[in-house]
Image (cartoon, rainbow, N blue to C red; front, side, top):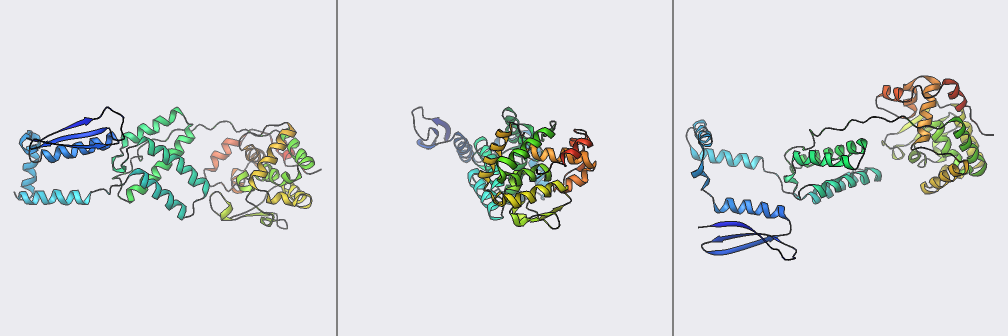
Length: 370
């Protein structure tokens, strides 16, 4: 008689989870560091020792299914077994530890040229998955995926949760293509609704103080403040531009694919004239400001803000440009083009319309060097 039971050690050791079985009166043991591995081995050993016994405990429904299979295959039991074997082989997943799959996935993204910001983002998300899910990728389930997404609500905003789920979906699509998991367990996990907060933008008085302080006290910062406030460029994009990117004769800005967040080349023109007056001033008085290292630019930005005694909200310069530009022209498509924004233009219009008057917008784009 053969038996198999779980057998755990209670002393401190690296592998406390065990399985004990007997064969012809001889005891055998195997221990594991993780309970999941213990459960997997236990089920396998139990099936092995009781091979052939399952057929003796069929219920009526199971027996009916087996008889139907035999009928479909002309009563040949060998054909039934062969069909089952082929089905298993065709649907057999490739065993892969999650940590290994995640490493392969991130390395692949690096090789195809995804930037550092993207790599760091997916690394953080995938590390969360690795800690929450079973060690073997084949054991990942939709129930666990939903549970994981709900657990994020305790710590993160809806936007962050949405981005986490999107990263997880992309990873699982990749895993499915490698036959590591059967289907994308995140496909049916709902994305949270995101309610956009009211945009925070700078008042006319605040932007005047910033530009005046930069011009008089920190001239190297003028170019980047002008690009944010009067062109709507993100700081991350502005710090990657050099003086050669600016076409002063035709009043255009060339953003190369390697400098853009979306990795797409763009030539931008049609900005208000005060932008070019500020950039011309910076070229003549502080040309080094067009080639500042990121850390130096952020230091200057903080210094200007402190000296001017104003507060810039997150993405405040870009939001200010959008707010005043939409008010000036009443044309969301025109604003979106300058932002290289390819999303729903009506959302941009609804978000920024009505925050300031056209008269205020005219004053905003009349702010020029003194």
